[in-house]
Image (tube, rainbow, N blue to C red; front, side, top):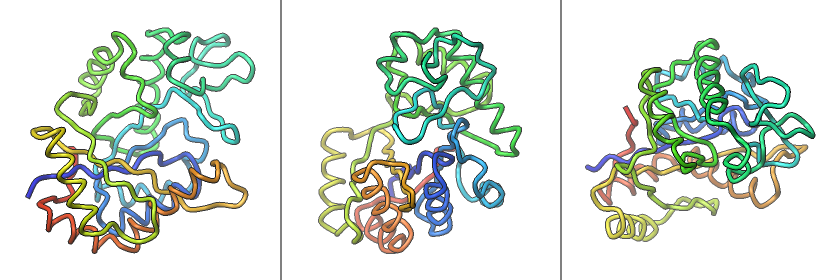
Length: 249
């Protein structure tokens, strides 16, 4: 069996996301969960998450952008007025990584990311790895500095050439078919053979009022449905193709 890192991102962003991720952990297929320290709903069901954290590999989902119109967030650290990381008009993060690259100062970025790590630990969480929300590690010189930060903080840094993206979309309510798994496996082996495969998802239940655009919440709700109702079937189909859900560390 080859290990397949199965990861759910964005715990803390909405109540429906937190609820779905908790159910996914209980279902068993998801082995890694990224937590957003600046998430506006981080405290929603945090006690339940704390009780389950030993069952998964917990990660700091480093967050420096705020991409939704209906849901905004900003610095968890003590960012001074006029911080290069925040939009002047509302004090929240910029909506995209290109803006972060244009305006963000490296020293303020590292300071904020360190504050996020410590904030999660102060809440009783025990993260083992670090990854980025809306991947900003492409910014020149930043990946090396974040890797150094992770070494200082004792976290596994996931943004390396050793990892590859395993693509198996969950955009329908029914579980992926045997053919879907065979296709995803063949594509991975053809394009990224030799790398450690990572399957990333963003499960979330539909809410009223909603926080995401309709197409986004539709896809995320389908992911949540698949990963909770059909986790056993997904595990069986994965095994038939030689995959076993695994943790980063």
